[in-house]
Image 1 (tube, rainbow, N blue to C red):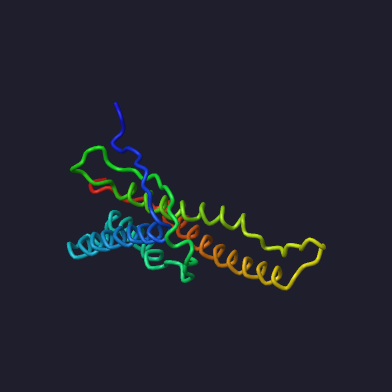
Image 2 (image 1 turned 60 degrees about the vertical axis):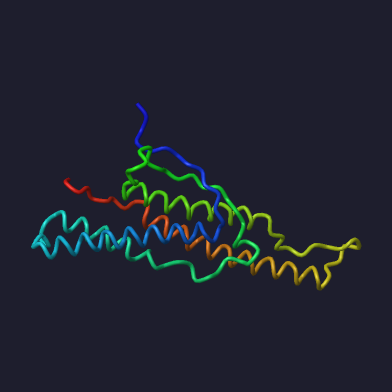
Length: 176
């Protein structure tokens, strides 16, 4: 017997991966807030179920609108990457909240991984010319590379923080 989900590889730009990850977190937040409101309006605000739904909604709320303030450098916005996400084997049934959250983390993680690889390749030390001297141009290029690396690190750290905040969320079941 195979599982309910299968892995699907998608090609996506770095900018779209960030947007998809945060969009999914926002949708989950909205669903959990709606569920919380419905429980509260149905006089179930004192139940254990309400507490678990509220805790989940608050955890998602803290990250949903927390996209990185730094923008990707223009040369990376359209860079394509492959991301593996889980999809339901049954076409007429969508993925669970937990799977959707996992997929959101996968979108963000693939960006983190790509940024890490790019940062490793940036020459942040000035290169010497044929005579062993460091030219002003080489110094300027190294400074620009260091600035780009700092920006990429900030974006990566922000995305990693979001992943850590949402990947451990336990979504309550409808009946459990």
